[in-house]
Image (cartoon, rainbow, N blue to C red; front, side):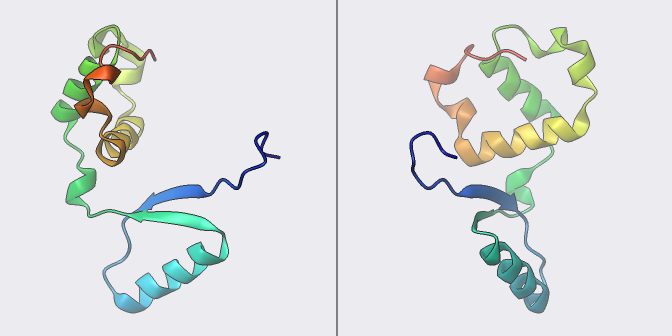
Length: 101
């Protein structure tokens, strides 16, 4: 139950298949699940580790290198890169040095 009694739709960030028939199948499944897909290109969801680290250093209160165990979590870092891209977190100065891991 949503405490504010408002409808909240799950957002799903995806790269759809290139083949139209496969894309239609995936779109149909997603629409049946009441999910709001956010389609991105592969290049938009880049996996540039240096850029991810630069963005994290802007957003985190401590330098990212201090988080030794998190530094090796490459899939998690890729997910963070997607969030940076979709929400422009690292472009808004009010977000700088506001986060912890």
